[in-house]
Length: 380
Image: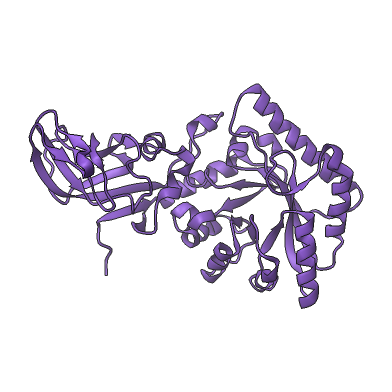
């Protein structure tokens, strides 16, 4: 049946394409794109997003968080290279080989565990080697006093007959900030990465595709492009403007909508919501909307507005699991069944990521992560 328009997410393919071509316009001729499809493509539908991007660029690669996400893409017919950024238990090495997946090696000890599993199964696995250049999270620490020890470890990985090294990368911690100290730290991490990889390349050690730029780095420090960039928030148009230091325009691909279920007159002194969360200090008109925190996690944690008839209507009385109430006194004629915009543009006004982040009490880049499976996803 056709979807029931209770609460839904409209995903703009046009804006997705716009963002992709803006990214390509920032890159050198031979620089590849790796689109990050973690968390079901930022809750936009990983398979559909991958299909659309692969149609634009046959050479595009994809990255996911874990093996389950990777297998889901393969099961959806995606044939492009897929890199798993996070941890996979080595006992699932056969699954990685079966689905032609590329695994990040997060440490030397981890590599040895995979080597043992692959040796027993007589299999060969595609890998990217992760280097820690100062992020301090995962990867082989490869700078200062660890430099020579790390070169020995990476050489052993690269010469292991059970690994096919197709890439090497690092994650830089301070691409989002624009102060001098942060910029210098990003450059320091990049220098560490270059020094380490160039040392190995001079010894004819094959490292494959080199990459270090994420979304913020791609717009803020394009001189560090190397062979490929990893872009997530840029693809979805979700990079906060404060982190986009070159003011390059990307378009959010998501609009969230719901319906007006009921309209009522509220008298002065009337309560609305659990625990009498709101008490009217004057007469007003209220509308119940068909969306709640089971549709968007943390919805209502902060002060929020929705758009009805191109007017910002404040949320009153808190947000429930499936519903919330807004003040529509200034919105003109409103009737049941009318559409309310929770995130996105409505004619001349917009609930942008900054406003939505305030409503959710989270960072702008986290907003997509709070959309649950529940609202229907529609591609427009």
